[in-house]
Amino acid sequence: MRFRTLCHLLIGCTLATAEQPLHAVQTDPLQAMVLTGQNNHGWQVLSAHYKNILEETGLFEVDVVTSPPPGGDMTDFAPDFSRYDVVVIEYNGDEWPATVKRSFERYMEHGGGMVYAHAVNHTFTDWPAFNEMMGIGGWGGRDESAGPYVKYRDGKMVLDHRPGHAGECVDAHAFSVVTRDTAHPIMRGLPSAWLHGTDELYSNQRGPAKNMTILATAYSDPAREAHWGVETHGTGEHEPMIYTIGYGEGRVFGTAMGHVDGGAPVDSEPWPAIDCVGFITLIQRGTEWAATGAVTQTVPDAFPTATEVSLR
Image: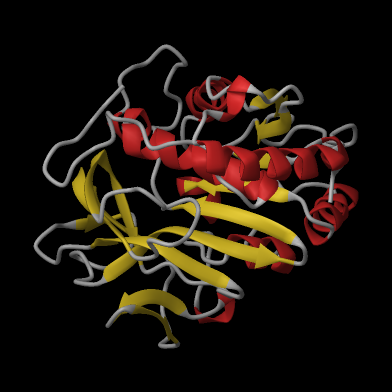
């Protein structure tokens, strides 16, 4: 375990008793990398957003590491993962060099932290270790060979092994997110249900789902028309929206939420999917948990309610 992470955990235990904000005493910020540069969604918007919302917590120092463009020369692309407590992946594009892949695998195996959202789950179809880290994914040619569909039925995660294409998406709308694991540090103190800002609702995700815990779900309404898939309507299932995965000694926080249109300029606002206070809070808390195994941040007063979206 990194010394910086251990210090954070010890401070977090003290603060959990004192009920004080972490940044009041934290002197050694956690180191976070936002790894980006390619995505069919708006990676410029998202990478800047992640940097801003993580730094505003007072817990993180954030470096943005940008890959070569699609089709570019990856020879000198060699992020030093070992310098960071957590890596926020905002990437969906060309394969990384084999040396980079192995470096990231070692980083996670030995206790690294990973965070990802939305379209990142399209990437690296043929990299088994990364698919284990993600837990579930969609598109990218995935089918039953990628693993089962992952659903939430009758109060538990269900692995559905029927064959078929991975990844569906109903038209963007505000939807209810239902907490399924109230005891997890990331979810502690959140409402049992809250209204997320207009976003694409992913469904029929599939993958290895090893060491996976579903923290929250959303209902894919069959009355809504689907696109970017092969179904014609929502699935009528409670689909995983927020989840964690254990990989080696490492921790992964993932969410299917967080859509931004591809090619969107950095100053394009608002984006309800990522400006939603619920999404922001979960990225902040999920990143702290992925880095340290604990969450010291309180839930903001402006958090969405069951009936009202709350945007920054």
